[in-house]
Image (cartoon, rainbow, N blue to C red; front, side):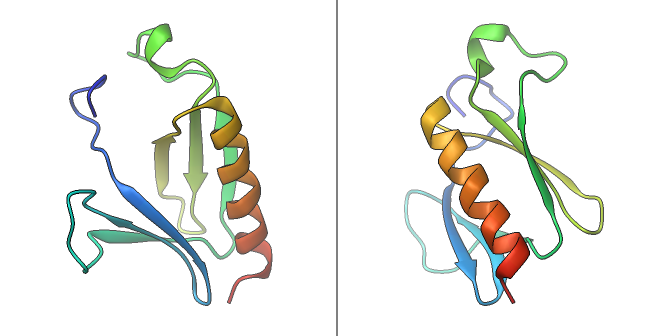
Length: 97
């Protein structure tokens, strides 16, 4: 959120039973702000998004497309972290309940 003013910083928790990626306000709060249903989703690395500056998103974006065709763009802290998130989400999407 500090680089792109319309983006928000969120804390994410990946669960496999049920297969959801819940997101929370990083400042606290026990209740999730929302959730992304991962069963049957597609997750891929994204090299750029239109209307973004290259230095803002260089090799750290990924996209989740749900079974209902809702698109979520997420930004990892590093390219290594992006790869780890993609692998974990792909696994849950295949095997989660």
